Image 1 (cartoon, rainbow, N blue to C red):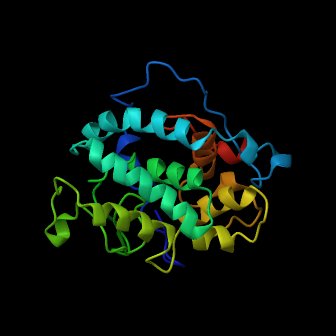
Image 2 (cartoon, rainbow, N blue to C red):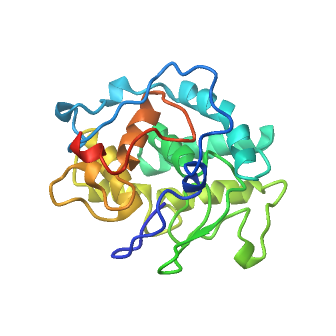
Length: 246
């Protein structure tokens, strides 16, 4: 989810619901164990380089395999095969159109919505800022589930809405998305993605530069890094209160 500077939006999008209790649909095996990352997002501080990321097809197949169960746990109709086909293509196209690594976009999608095309539109409790879609973006226009606008779990979710949820979230059809936050990070190495992830979630860098001290979800950048190397789950084992000081 994105913030509208200087306001903080509701943390973690729909996954905050899944995090409230243990996953009802855990993976039988996890080839990649979760690792806590803190520091400035650089390889020198222990964060994974792009060369350590899993390839796109592996990330897609492992995440989409758990998506149906995650959607059900959120009382959402699981994606159809055709909806998944559109979603996958939209993520890859967004990577081409933004210059972002599509694996980063994919990781953000599953972090924000577990890839459920009918994910609920969330609203911040304090500022009433709207976060719709697969990337729970800042005031995007595309969604297949927004009860406040009279849209209740569109089945099927139209192709245009799926594509639009991705273009909204990456910042192609909105003014503030993944493309903009990665640029705002000011970095040119792999840390631009981890710093951008923090900015997407909370809108401001911690004064000490430690991504584990993010003011919204302190685990957000660590979660993204883990997703990129192949960790998969809808419940992060990261402790938001301690991640920055481990």
